[in-house]
Image (tube, rainbow, N blue to C red; front, side, top):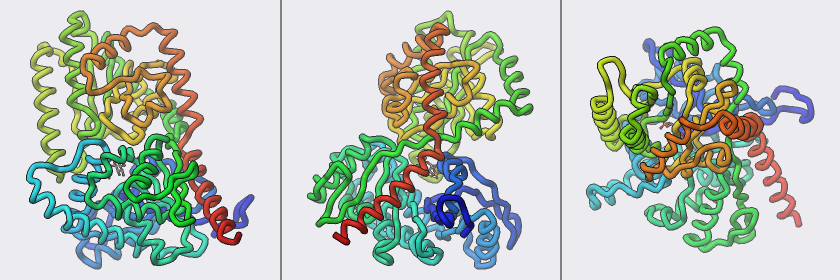
Length: 489
Ligand code: G6P
C-alpha cells in the first residue's frame, strides 16, 4: 500500500459492480482496446484520493477462449480493473433476465412480467438460479483478490446476493452495499417470489446505502414486514446484530463539467449550436432509452404544448438524446419503435419544409459535445417515471452558470428531493401539467431563473460525488468498529 498523510497507509477499496468502468473491444486474438466510461460511479470514485481503489466487474463482452481472457485480464490490470467472465447463457438469464426484466422494472414500480404467467413463473426460478450463480462468481473473484483490511463496496440491484456470499466465506470482511435505483414500497417488494432471500442477503452487509431517505425507509419496512425483524433509527436488527441503513445521496464531479466549458473545442461547439438554433429556444432531454425515463410521455407533453401554443411553433426545438441500452431485452426494443413512431408523427404534424420541432438521436454524445449542449439549453426536461437519483439534472445545472436555464424535473426522480426548490417539479404522468410547465419555463423572467439556478448550482457544486463516496466509506469503517465494540461489551 502507498504511504499517505493521516493514515499510515491508504486503505484498499474493492468496488464490485456488474459493469466495469471500461468497455473492452477485441482487436485480435490476444489484443484488446479499452476505453474508460465516465458514469456517475466512475467519476465519483476516481475523485476519491484517500483510498486505493480496484474494480471488479463484468467486462460486457463474451470471451469464451482462454487466450482472450488472459489478454483482457492483463490489459484491464493496468486500469486497476479485474474482470468476471460470464458466458452468454448466464448473461442472458442473469443480466437480461433476472436483473433487467424482473428486478429493474419492479424496483421502478412497473410490476413483474405478465405476458405469459406460467412461462414467467417457470423461467423465474431458472433466472433466479442464474442470478445467484453469477453473484457467487463475483464473490469468488473478490475472495481471490481480497487482502485483510480491504473495504468491499458492492453496487446495485445486480449484486443483492453478493453480501451473503462474501460473509459466508469470511465473516470478518468489511462489506457495504449500495442501491442506485429506488427501493420500492414494501408492498411492491412483497410481489417478488425471492423477496426474503434477497433481503436476508443484503442484511449480511455491514452497511446498506440508498440515494434518498424514502428508499431507506421502504427497505427497513420490507425487512420488518416481510422478515419480521426490528427496525431501529440506525437500521435493522436481527438477534442483536445491527445492519446499518442510511441515505447517502450521490452527486457529480461538478468541477469536471465546469472546467470542460472553458475548453476551446467546447466553446467552438457552443458557438456552432447557438448559430444553428438562433431565434429558437432549445429544450433538451438526455436519457438512456429506458421505459423508466418517461420519454414517450415527455414527447407527448411537448406535442400538447405545441398544440396549445401555435405562437411557439417556429420558436422552440426539442433535442432528445436517447442512448440505446439493454437492446437484447424485448421491452427495450418495443420502446424504441414506440418513441420513433411518436417523434415521426409529431414532426410530420408540426414540421415545415425547413424545420422540425424534435431532433431525436439514438446514440450517446461524447463528453465535450454533451457539455456544449447542456450549456446552450434553455429548458431541460427530466421526466422519469421513477429514477434512483438522475444525474443528468445535476450535469445540466453544472453547465448553466452563464445561461441560467430552467430545469423541469420529475417528482419521482431522487434528485427532486435535493433540487426541489430550484426546479419546476412535475408529475410526468400528467401530460397537461408537463405541457403547461413547458410554457411556464419558456416564459420565466430572468430574476426567477437566476434565483432557481443559484439554489441548484450551490447544491450541485457542494454535494459532489467525491464527498458521497468518502461519506459512505467512512460510515462503513465506523459501523464495523462500533459493531466490534458492541460484541466486546
Ligand atoms: C443504471 C444502473 C447501473 C447501470 C446503468 C446502465 O444507472 O443503476 O447499475 O450500470 O443503469 O445500464 P447497463 O445495463 O448498461 O449497465
